[in-house]
Image (cartoon, rainbow, N blue to C red; front, side, top):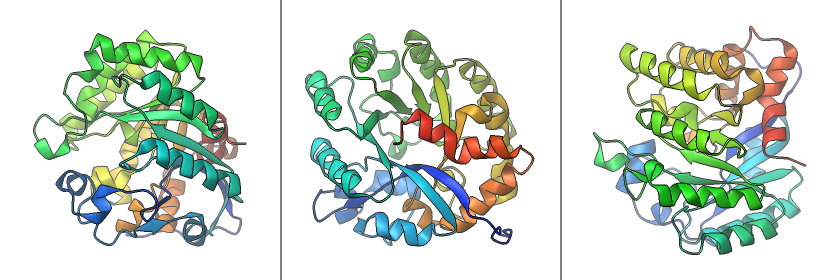
Length: 308
């Protein structure tokens, strides 16, 4: 894979998707014992560190000027404990952090959990893992296949109105029509579209269907798109030629003012790592104006997640 030389100036970024964790403090079961579902997502992950914190990230991202980071929960056994730990991390961080915490919109104590998150100043969003692959039982992260259309689950989202939190719903591309209905139900809540809307069929027909479904979703002004975790979609040996058409199509539909780039570290280290990834991102958007590139690499994530 060929990558351009490092530019003479450091690219300013707000990294839209990072995982910091310490498995000595918070238990992440899949890091202690091989998890078939997680392995179906990322492949062999045995080389992932048990601890990954800001210092390690800054060493790997030193080619860029990091103006902010969006921390995402990392499947801890105790999401509330993990969020409180991350809040302490954010308060001590030399780089501004905004936080995305885990939620279950069917949980009987949902409001109580949201109150806890509201008490943590850096939590600006929540997310739920809803990916459900009808063809592969190992790629089923939701409790059920029909959650997006469940009225009780949908009502849970309404609680976000009282807490000023964005909502990330991680789905696979075949679920986009159901996601569209949810987004339209709550035009006053901001939704983050994760992982390039996570296509499963990477062939021509899959690309066409993905674009058709997104052509509806992109008309909803309350949605921003997160471009990250491309190694989970296209494999650890992804190529620029393979990924670029998808990224460019997404940006064409949503526009530079509603797209943001993330590294997905440290999982991205299972592939090429930070610098080759951001070199590739820059090649993909080389045709955009300087202001549009700055929006995608920095401004959108900073504003969407209220990085301060």
